[in-house]
Image (cartoon, one colour):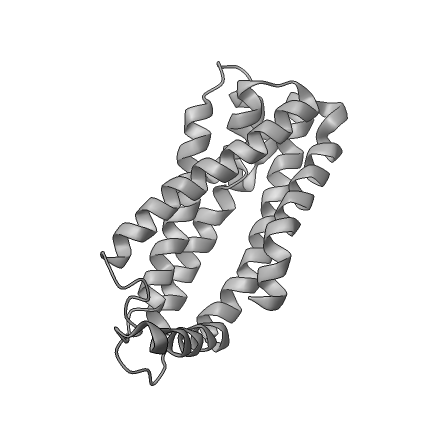
Length: 199
């Protein structure tokens, strides 16, 4: 994975010599959801489980599998329609998530060192009291050091990923490399900007 992170053009030139492996792209996308999800669990370990049923790690695991599939598929389809690369487009889409794994590891360290803290009572069982409790929970999460770091780390991850997309585009569809980056950034902005400013 270090090759795609540091020398993506060389990585994709080697990749071009073998058949596409889109399933590998999905694994990278899942890992890029799983590691930040684990970091979030570590950071919020003192707050308790807001879901109220089932272990938090199970919901995180399911979320990573679904989110990985959704975003990998979304970018893969978009890249395919832009370039006609087929399975190679899905492989490129997956590798674009590689910086998310690195950022997730960084956040894991931040979450361990700076847990989210709040003077919250136990999660209420009365539905009428849950809304106020959950609002206080969200306020604590938004104001935390972990969340502030994760926002800017997310921006870094997107820019790093855009560089990887551009490198892959240069190798697989040179005339469409810039278009792939534009598509990638537009989709990322659609999902990221509301959370960055209002989350």
